[in-house]
Length: 325
Image 1 (tube, rainbow, N blue to C red):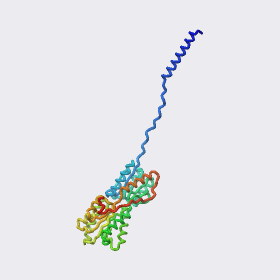
Image 2 (cartoon, helix red, strand yellow):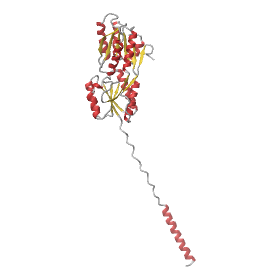
Image 3 (cartoon, helix red, strand yellow):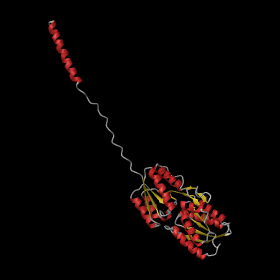
Image 4 (spheres, helix red, strand yellow):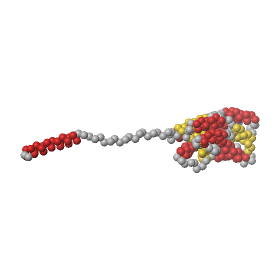
């Protein structure tokens, strides 16, 4: 083979190599794209049904509104149903909540002893029921409330002191509310422990309309006990009937009668600050109660059952000196 022919063969091989390399360089293989995960499915909202017979009461509305606000801050969905004092309808509303398969039911200041059928429905559906200033009964996980015995005791002691430890006392109560019932029992024990004090009347106050009802009852009592000094004081289980009593007392010019309430509402504080017949109330920590219940419900959803069936939040006595502070 001649040198010239050998160089020709080498040249051809080189050209073919370049062509192959060129073809190879022009071919690109796409890297596999990572598989995108599907967007996360949003967890369904926790649904809470609040049922109450007392939304017309200012303090009931306040504590339920605070609970709703705190619960919604957790991302929960809260519905509130009021039955305006109708406990039969309250049972039906609990059963409605069970049918809707809510995650929890809250009793807003209703006596669970009057809701047995509804509580049984919730138990059968494994829906927990919580009390907000209500009570305890089979089917109620926990009740968050004020220390009602202390509220009644402290206000009764304040009234005893205000009337000089003697005289005739009238009590305004509402037994369907377990908290008011407990307050009244503690107050009555204080009065009975003072031999110079006599309970001359115990009157049930209607709800809704406690202020108007108490005013009318007081007007009748002032007619029955017309002599100055025949009534020394009026103990009311909450502020609305106390205010109704004050309105009747002032209209009749019987301002020697001392009145005490419970709740520490804004209207009560304003009246107490005037230095008139309405001389004291015991403020409940409704913000603390609402926050505590949200805390306990959240813990329950996380598998932590309450350590106790009752959680009692202390109150604070309100008098003329601290009414507007």
